[in-house]
Every structure is written in structure tokens, then in C-alpha cells.
Image 1 (cartoon, rainbow, N blue to C red):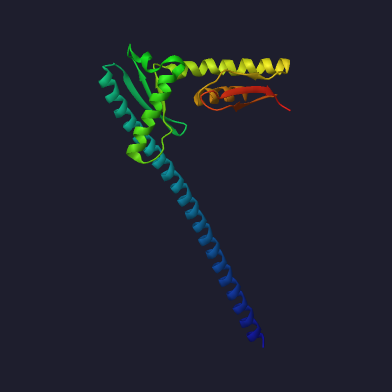
Image 2: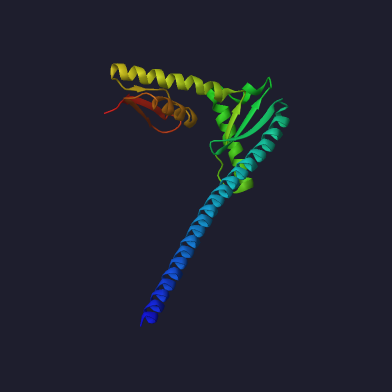
Amino acid sequence: MMSETVDTIDADQDEETTAGADSSADAAAGDAASGDAAGAGAGDAAEEKQGGDDLLVQEGDIAGDYLERLLDLLDYDGDIDLDVEAGRAIISIDGGEDLEKLVGPRGTVLEALQELTRLAVQQETGSRSRLMLDIAGWRADRREELRELGRSTAESVLSNGERVRLQPMSPFERKVVHDAVATVDGVTSESEGEDPKRRVVIFPEG
């Protein structure tokens, strides 16, 4: 009788040990699967980002070739620089004495040339381009002017409580102003009207 009891206890212990081992193996397999899934997800994200950057670099190369041909036709000197920033291709042309002619009054010629360059890229890639073109540092200088305008106007509106309508601006200019206004608490901004007369309106919150 004692022998049967001992055998039964040993059998139960063997089953518990086996079950515990199986459970540990299942848990380890689950952890491994989770790790593999996480690794695969990170790998997919990295590949997707790399693919997006490669497309932007391709856009920059196409735009650079297009603009180089344009400069040759106009007999203008200029150094073309390509970069990728904030999810878009950035093309800059500097160094030529005649480049300001490609900017025009308040950047009107530059905006038109940017659209033509985007269309040239789209024709090659089949996808709409969001590339940004700057010539002779005009956008960089204009960005600083607009940031100061946005901040100073927002502070004035906050002080006197009266809304202010700025002069009509391009999409690029309006975005810079909106970003500058957003840094001042208690004031907000919106765009109104239709292009080319669309403008930024700054007013108190609430």
C-alpha cells in the first residue's frame, strides 16, 4: 500500500514537473515571438524611412538637373546644393550675381520657379513633390523677417486686444507667420481669403 502511494506521488510530481517545463518553454517561445515581432516592426519602420529618404534624394537629383539646365540656358552662374529636411527635398542655389532676378518682387518669380521644378520632378517620378527651392538665400532671410513680424504683431494683439490682418502672403510666408504666432500664449491666427490675396489674421484667444 505504501509503495502504491509513493508511486502515485512520484507520478504526480513528474506530471507537475513536465507541465512546468512545458509552460516555461511556451513562455520562452512567446517571448521570442514577441521579440521577433518587435524586431520585425522596427526593421520595417527603418526600411520605410530609408525608402522615403531615398525618394527625396531622387527628387533632389532630378530637381538639381532641371535647374542646372535652366541656369545654362540663362547663362547664369550658381552653385546648387541638395539636402533633405523635415520630410522634403531642399534645393538651394547660391553664388551667382544674376540670381536675384530669379527671385523677383517678394519672391514671386521664385515661387513660380519652385512650382515648375516640382512639376518636372512629378513628371519623372509620377508622384507630387513638396520640394522647397531657395535662391540667393531669399527664403532664409524672409523667414527671419516673418518670424519677427509674427511675434511682434502677436504681442501687440495680446496687449491691445484688437485683431490684425496682415498683407496677402504666399503659403510659405503664411506658415512662417502662423508658427511664430503660436509661440505667443493668449493669441492665435488663421488664414482668410483666396490666393493670391489670402492673408493671415491674428487675434486674441477666447
